[in-house]
Image (tube, rainbow, N blue to C red):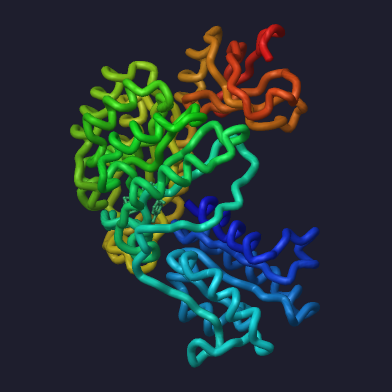
Length: 428
Ligand code: SAM
Ligand code: SF4
């Protein structure tokens, strides 16, 4: 979501006549687009913002903007503690960014007063449902199109509803127009984005059918799916429409029903495993990945074991393992029985090992098979790097002219996080 937001900010800057600086020291404007999902991400953004403060001392005309979820969450603190920042704007401010930029540009006093602290600030609790803004897309065969903004689910650990506002769905015609306008010589795979795309108001299955009908869209993905809203219609559309990748990221968050309840996820272990069983029966070659949080308040050894066992029972290809991080305003941050740091660390390491072993075992099952790969670019070792329809990275020797093309690759070996393969010499 942040990558997509940054591409929109870059698109607006380009439209307003800005060009990328050769290096940061030569920039007239620097925007730091922050993420606040966990304390680590938040600190990274704030640290980076502090690290560019010295550039402002050298060039007082430099405009520094702090954007994204940390800006929304920490607005008062940033206003107080970071006087070198000229623009503080939450994620919903993107719609107004061009106007804010004009305000900053057209005053000699960069500390333009829009509030009594003397900064340009823009915070809106609620995103607009429509967003017809330019997007400066990375030159990548996979590209993002937002279909929902915000979230209504209020999982007890999660800051998103507080910083990105209530859930709204973008209208179908606007989404389809954005996809039709994509440069299909580069962008072969469209990833429909939202915090819970399954709740898109017009029915995600209907949208998938419409997107599939657009000429030049070869592969379609969507993320993220909330298990409680993954309908039979969506599963049927995935099974039926050839453009939709057989890849699903379905965050479970915990394998313990007790913890899932405390997380306010609105499903239990049994529901999740039955859902997964249904998905495997309709789409046997599905690649299934998930998110699991360790160290949620009150998580016992048994709850943690339940999380480990769901990795095997759901037969995940891979899992993002996350250590619980108490976030401002969230209910879980105030729960008793917070788990101590060493226990959280130990659980995270143990889970990472289980995930790594299972990822290896699942990848090894692919050796000898021929899979389509979308060529993304050169790998570090000089070979080409591509992604399979199951979102797995694969390296193979082939000429660079194959960039942005879909080619069959025979898988020759497998590691946990990468496959290796060969492309037949006649291909291309
Ligand atoms: N909307 C998606 C869903 O419900 O699955 C997830 C979006 S969230 C931006 C991405 C992931 O961050 C979540 O799936 C969760 O595992 C993780 N996450 C969110 N809040 C967290 C917290 N306070 N501590 C640790 N991980 C967290
Ligand atoms: Fe956060 Fe839950 Fe919404 Fe996902 S569904 S963004 S985890 S509140």
